[in-house]
Image 1 (cartoon, helix red, strand yellow):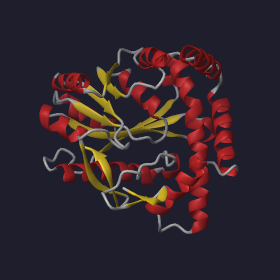
Image 2: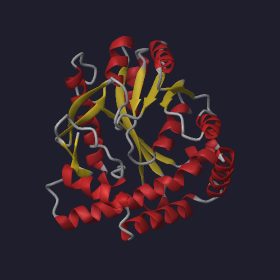
Image 3: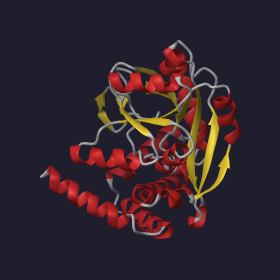
Image 4: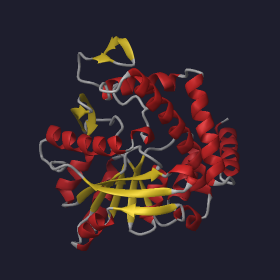
Length: 301
């Protein structure tokens, strides 16, 4: 059964990968809007997250932002097969602008390792492809549920030489070694972490379980960190790669201080283009003990 699922998913990816960017974005936008009008659970999660994070907006403004968020998430979903199936040169041709490249150069010129923190904002697959085309890079990943799909994912993400490492002890050791050599490591920093490597820290003013991996790697290797994302430009014109400094304290030995700086760094980017953030993710399901689960008010964390 898993082999059949892999075959069907692969066929679907290849078919989607044959589309133009404009066609993919139109289809993705339509799927997102369908999810809005059908009042799917993703709409409910998005509305809950925006009510928590942006209480300063009135109901009409939050509804409009939620609708646009679902539309952008749909576009991202259909764009990903393009990033996996298109020739690399064609993918990189979608990058129309790069903002903040001097920040990256300043770190690498010192021979230091660099951690690129890439939240689920814009098209993170294109961001990873862009940086792996220029630097010796490793990226942390979690194996997919379908085992056969893992080989495909490693092949397409690593076709420029990028090394994918699992988020286990061996993988983290490899990541640290690459950083000590002055390499680049990519981490998605805005999901609820597993295991013990976490701290509760505010994100949009709400304490939530946050990874401490980036700060620990910085302390162990002397690496620096920057935040990056690929912003979707209007009218299918392509993308802008944005590179930003992190808030002071991301490498602090105090895990709460470090996690707070990390979350603030992500929040600053999200506020720049809030509609392109993946608000459909249950980011606040892991809160300090005794707090209500906002997605299930009858449940206490």
